[in-house]
Length: 278
Image (cartoon, rainbow, N blue to C red):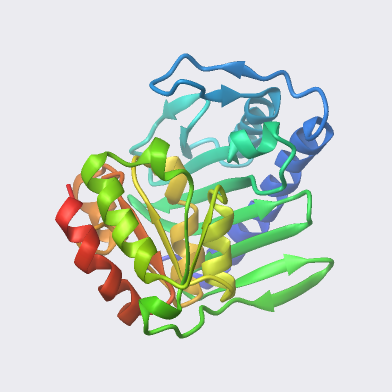
């Protein structure tokens, strides 16, 4: 982990909780309500954005600018501002907007903090059910109902015993990637679709074992890395290289991710994934 003092880390972790509360105040009144959805006109046939997405990111940026004016941002809705700063907040205010507009509580607020170019602190928040998964290299925990519960991945050495997930294989995977996913899915015990970043939290919580994704941006994964690694999990690209090192090396997210709680399970999945790796 980057060299942050315990006192500074505690300060930033407390602020991260504040940011999640501010985001929730913007998001929750619009969930299953008047969310003002529009189509982004991006690469997808349907790529929604809502007033919840935009309002939450504005609220986060405002609080950060007031508290830490020298910090930078990389955000899905409002782009980059000083992305090479010592501290950079990486934001996806509503990860899983398709679930959000469908009224499904599988969306999350992703807030990550890079220190000297590497993910150092992060959170996966599901404010509708009152869950906040937060972590760093020193550990990860779930905050819910005033209680703090340590997070730990579970052992699952065999892919044939694994519960796995991806968001939408038909939308997110290319031909070769889709073939690799189908091979992994055929070997696994159970697969779930459409969970977005909530599946990452479930790996950290020890209820799921493997998540395979492609086509991600930094804001889709940065916040989850400290949570998963703090819980004892692994985050790699499809070649099995540690993603944190990749982000530090070239400053870019490769787009293909494998998340696992058990290295043996990950290695089995990589047999297929490496054939379609970038």
